[in-house]
Image 1 (tube, helix red, strand yellow):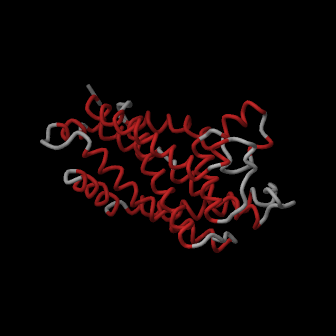
Image 2 (cartoon, rainbow, N blue to C red):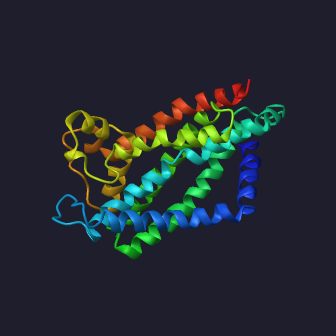
Length: 260
């Protein structure tokens, strides 16, 4: 942790010196809420409601929060850029822990996430989203969201260390999109073909999304007897712990071998 904090500080200072990044950080959550909330909101019915509108936006906001938390593209591109510029080689020459640089990156990304989540939640409240759970349930939901984002960052960095430059990593980002679409983030999975619904129901994003909807008191999708959706809070915590257990060692190994 002692070595990770300066690494996180480096990334945060780079953000403060990049006004364009700050504009995107602030504008992206607002744009997502407005576009998805008002384009899909009039066309998609949510469980227990015949029409969408404000009801769909209440269903949608937890999904958008999870989509934002699972966005691995920035960390993937940053890791690939460090490879391309030789910064990873310079870091490896320093007498610091091998896990310090990835850990610092994950901590900095967590701070970006807090800012983005706050903006998205405020925007959601403006368009009709409501938190109907109590304080403990709300704080638990936020904690799960941050934990999942922390875990997802390690996945992004691991993939980023596999690329030699940020352009390739950016092009590969489109391959990540189906992970979010094949889930209950935007629509209930009940309308999907059987084989696709099975994948969607066992998608980690579906469990985290269902956990947030349950804890915030928002409309939920039918569980369909699937264990992760029957016990979404437990499943979300297990998924986050499992991803960390797998990708922290993989990412550290990738950092050590990157560019060689």
